[in-house]
Length: 341
Image (cartoon, rainbow, N blue to C red; front, side):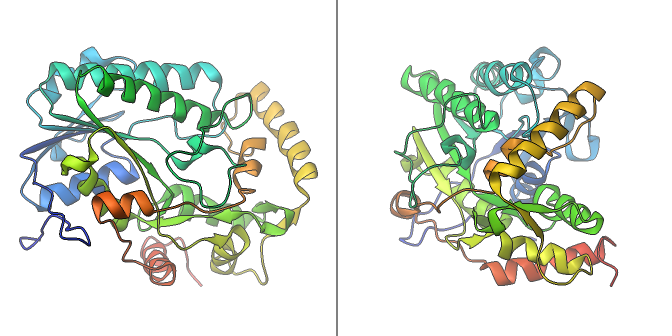
């Protein structure tokens, strides 16, 4: 990939290529994709993840114990934090340890190591599930007992923006849509497994809104936001600007599983009671499972998001439409042996 280049915004915005990047969660879906993209540009990439990957200069560690990996980040110009509790079933203490204290730890490591920019991966979940159609970066974030993943993401944003406001380090926040593409467990592999077992159930006929973004488009937007001056101190929602219903999106998985028609459905109220009971049992038995009320809320979102800010300041424009993205995703799943029919 010697011909790899930095993305260019639609209005000619040209971000400067960083000399070095440090990525937490470097072996995850997004972290690995970012690392590969920057390496293809000749950028020095280091990282941290729960398990070491010496071939990609990734050391073992986690956000709650920075002393074991902080030195590895020293001298990196750009610090990208993708590490997080990626779950709708975690308890408050886990979210507090990783998504708040852990993010503050990452900020401290970046500052001590001399980073010039800190980029935090948040999520559209920070807006909850009951936001207005066309929500943007000014829409209030979610609070309360429900949708705890989103509450934790919003709390992490406060820490990052406070560090920027205090002049500790220049910061940027990305709120990705539903990121899919080759390598995605959350939106490809796991739903396919559920479809195969017949456990893929959607609330209210699957009419909730899904807001996909192909991983390559997310990387373009991230690289623009991380290096353009216009990205400093800003939050950007990045998604594919092509909303579909959950029924439409997950019918792909239903078909890949060899099933006819569409995923099964339950009224939201029934689905909430059922998943609450399952979640309670799983917690008592110590089983990890994403069958939770918050998952049902997530599949009941009522609208899409505005890309106006990212378009104006970054020149961000998604290039991979949903049909093409799903074609590539299906090809990858077949390569992995997940689809055999």
